[in-house]
Image 1 (cartoon, rainbow over the protein chains, first blue to last red):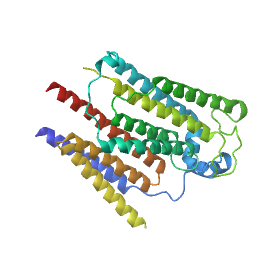
Image 2: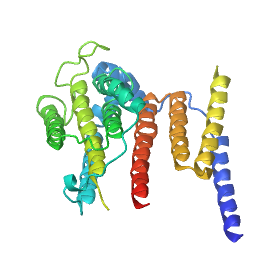
Image 3: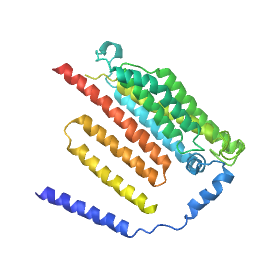
Image 4: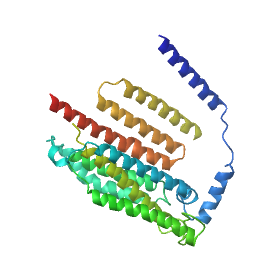
Length: 233
Length: 86
């Protein structure tokens, strides 16, 4: 009874707070100073059509590096925790029921298309919405579809490690190249900004974002692979 | 135009709350997982309406794609162990 009552009071208080927020809301008629700077200068300075990508990769590139590092740490910790008490995987494989015909055929059709969509999303990150993180997640969902079809499927751990390390190294290396040849760390204007709206434009952004996409995809896939390999009894 | 957008937004919000209730109250885990994925799908449409296509994409890919897949994957595992124990 008392518990119900306190929950009700909490809900009411939350409702009042949100109602106050909603009533006091007046839409801005113009962008604030920071937003206006980005909106006006992105096309001429960076050459990217998608302002969000320009902010993520160039203006706030260091934050993106931090995000990628956090994701890498998460993948490493998941691998560490799941490998605790993990017996050699071959001895403990159980027989699983075969997955349905629909899933098998459908995944054969869909996996290449999903991979293609992921690559498209991160290569075109500077032109259309989306980018490295979204593309990486899409690629990982293709990997997950493979795992759903055949739970005993194993991704090559070596390939994943190589892709991840190389893209991480290139990401940081290109950032340092920005210090040497342009305005600062992760400055994308090492290459010419090119024509606004074409694929090879916006300096280093498509290259950096492709590496971010590969890295995120490899990290998610390695998490899924670790999860699939755990056979704790 | 603006009123239509607001109407769609309110409808989406109601649908999200309704799906959340389904997620909590339904007995079968598979239905609850599907409903949880639906919440993310509605949320991603909401982000699209609020002119944030990048966030919408992340929400659709991770919230509604990867998480739902992952939950089903884990459910399959748990079921397998149940069968073995019986």
